[in-house]
Image 1 (spheres, rainbow over the protein chains, first blue to last red):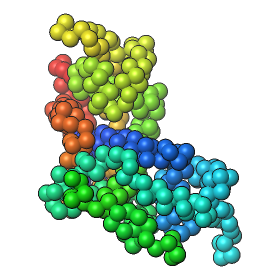
Image 2 (cartoon, rainbow over the protein chains, first blue to last red):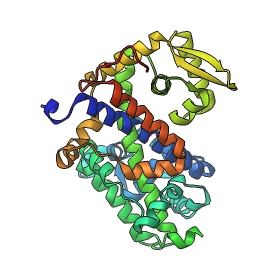
Image 3 (tube, each protein chain N blue to C red):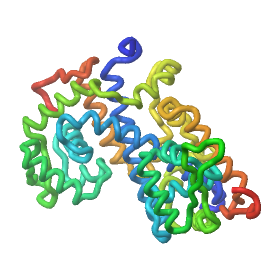
Image 4 (cartoon, rainbow over the protein chains, first blue to last red):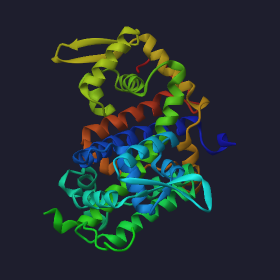
Length: 186
Length: 186
């Protein structure tokens, strides 16, 4: 069926093209992400778990694995380490005894807010790289095509969690990136 | 100066958004890439080095590192392993004694062509994920915004090597992904 929609050559060129560009994009992001979190003695997976728990106001380990694009065992093991450091707490929920939920402790929440406030103390090449587009179009690019492809690969709930987390930043941080609503969730 | 162009919050939301999406995109690509090359006992860096040498018709180690987005020492060490397996050969060039160049051996070239011919025997989620866009617009998406950002981050020569490698596939493979021009380079 697919043979009628595209030639094998077309598909090969397209997917190898995306492979090259996504590797280059991710390596640049990864480098900046590591520099940002280095002072906090966290690796990317650990920070990603904290970030997801913060924005979802508590999440199941399987949500974390899905949204963080990591194995469930990776999500679980790193969450355990974060619990030992007092940044996360584990719980079961009455309506859902099968899943383990994690929630930020007050210390974890403060750490995250502090990290957000220090976000711009390390370089983020992606921001510099997108500036000409921002000047041209008046806003940063939204990569709608990439989002459409990810929606098909990871499903609608992945995109919803994605949007929810950014809505959260939109609501709870001021223009300087400072957390403004200290007494409400998250 | 940058403060006038964007708020810190805008920049933070944009770059964390790209971080999430590029991680998800890369993890999906990486998984499919690994499945494709698994039967050939290569890791992604090794395959990437062969792929670059193939398309550039020989390349310096620093070209490989730059275009493959890996450390020079990584590029060198994996190239050495590929040389030991008889897939690559090392040389110096008369006009440029300082750099080490690598070139595919006949065995390396045949391996690459064989891998291309078997490309569609493993799944590539990115192709499936992009099909609705292909149906809608009549072609696979070109992610122009991502390319524009990468051009700013990695420079014009990165993009030129990028385009050259795809021009190469365009020219030397038929619609079924078979190599058609066996006696000419590459």
